[in-house]
Structure formats: structure tokens, C-alpha cells
Length: 126
Image (cartoon, rainbow, N blue to C red; front, side):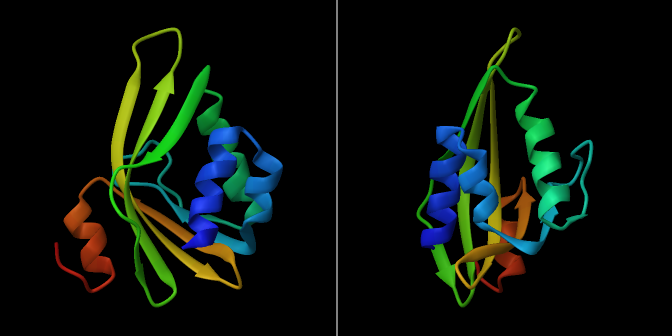
């Protein structure tokens, strides 16, 4: 759980070097269904490139947990909101992240619009 919290902190601080260090070399990213580039993105550099491209859309952005972190074996699930501010209207996207953590690094990150679906991937119920 600490690695996921540290990733949120690094992202919100804009410290992409610290964020990169929290990713396993073979990390896999899957964006939510319907996302313009759903992935999967495989490997630290591919994942960082995808996330840096997403950040370029905004003048400022932050990721905020809006639920408790649920730890289940080597996975962590959290409901979150991604705030983005740009020249146009402000954006607030709610989604759930399911993160697999191995050796204190994120090895898999998958995002869902539907919180119940995310919990189901972990064998949990709302």
C-alpha cells in the first residue's frame, strides 16, 4: 500500500523521476474501457511515455484518493478522482485503480470506471 501512496504523492508533486522509480521495469498499464489509448502498455518507458502524454493535456492536474485503500494479497484498490485544469473547462474523472505491487514497486496498474467491476477483479464485493 505504501508504494501506491508514494506514487500518488510523487505524481501530485510533479516528481516524475520519483514516480518512475516506483514502477517495476516490466510494469503493465491498462487504461479504463473506452479510453482513447486503452493499452496495454508494457515496460517502464512505455508506461511513463503514456502517462507523460496524458499529463501534457493539463496545465495542472492531481490524483486524489476518494476511498480507503483496500489491500488484498499483493494488490491494492482505491477509488480516485483525477482533477485536470487547462484552458477549457475543469475535468474531474472518477475511476478505480487496481495496483499490483511486487518488491515495493508497481508491477501492474489497471483502471476501471465501475468500482464494482474493479473489486470483482480482486474477488471482492462492494
